[in-house]
Image (cartoon, rainbow over all chains, first blue to last red):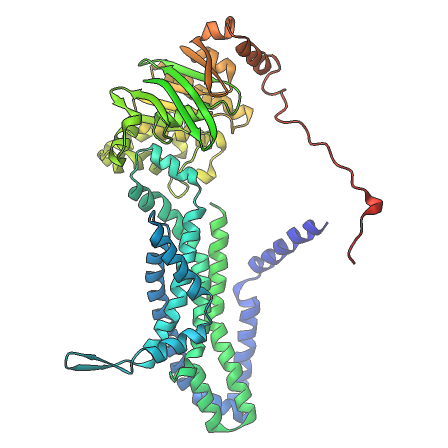
Length: 272
Length: 268
């Protein structure tokens, strides 16, 4: 009985989602309602004061969000590169490499992200001296490094898990066809791994993006910092509530499509 | 190809206790025997996937147990094909790509020529219409036929079939056996580990019966199946052929244990 319910409910939901045309789906309906409300306010000139302020501050908020996105993209790029290297080394036949990489992964996966960000902010110098040039070491790069560390540890785990999930029978079959070990890796195992890695990798990206909000605590002018400045400047309670709701909405608008795309990829994956 | 006095141990478990086997060019040799008697292990030793503790394995001019480097093993595996029980096709490649990837990457053959040969092989296994399909879209029998074609694509001197029909349902077993029969009639040198006794009797030149890691008896097919010399061979054949593989139960049905319902305590 329970299994019937469990089986029938997702089918019912999926049928509903694919049957209704795009303009009638929930998010589209909400968007229509919001647009209608905005049009009404603009036409009649009765926009609440808080929303007027929000409209004035929205360019600044969006520029702050751009800073968050920049940090997250760069942190994920660095983390992925480093993580792939660490993940590959963790499967090395040399025991020393395996132990070192295992410690790396365990340390940075089990450390609070805020602590890592503080760590990189205060460990790295304020500016770099190279021969006679002085380069400023901006705060946001320190945050990028601080986020790249847990990102790389997680990517290493994702990579190692994907490789070990390839059945050993694939290795045997490739060996029996006279492939070299490096060729098996490159032609048989890695292509299968990349598909398996994509959903958890995208999950990791969404979580790193949400962690970029911590950058505001170390002085980076990101969207959270901008929201704080805005709420202090306007000094209205209703505006403060509104601006923090907007923050939630902005992060949701960025991260939710990623989650949806991940689920769509997973479903397409299950066919193979 | 010849094996002499091969011993192999997995830890404390001795799997092969002195195997002597000989296959002449153009011969089809079947290895039959109960499960766990070391048949698949013998095949894996021939192609270097497993390394025996002692004994000699000769494939053509190559002494397999003396091979050390990867390059030497690769040179051997280009000449010995292997077809697995679980097909083991590459799921991220189409059927045609599965056939073509090894000859082009490993043997470095021209791609156009390899594609042509692959299509001929697919036609031989009667799967030309599936050349653009992915392994996940094929049935078990079709996948196994593709696996045989993939092993043939490397133009090996010797092919090893490791219980290739054991994972298939009875209808599809026939289509795979037809392919193997055609190949044997064309003169392919092969070693077949199989539970299909009637098929083994029909196509084999030599039959080896193994039990518990030793070769109990070997000889021409009609001798082994017609007048087996050893009592163990007779007993095995009687079990395998007399009851028929379809009637013999795979394992005894588990006896359901009754729970002392009155004395159970439930957490609420």
